[in-house]
Length: 85
Image (cartoon, rainbow, N blue to C red):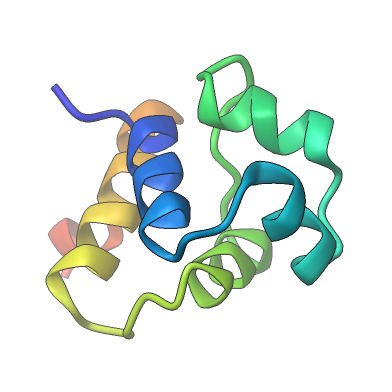
């Protein structure tokens, strides 16, 4: 089973970025991102989630983009937006 944190980490690694280099590039606290990738904190929503999607170079409307948003919603106990339409 895929989780938001595993997806995030795999996508970051696919960009050939370490956690620290990703955080420096996008002005993100490494401690918080580490917790997010390990599932210690809930995925964000709203603008912060969009910022992360952009930083991970996810194309709006792509399968990976939908998976990213669906995993975030599911782990936060929300219904994915695409299922509300």
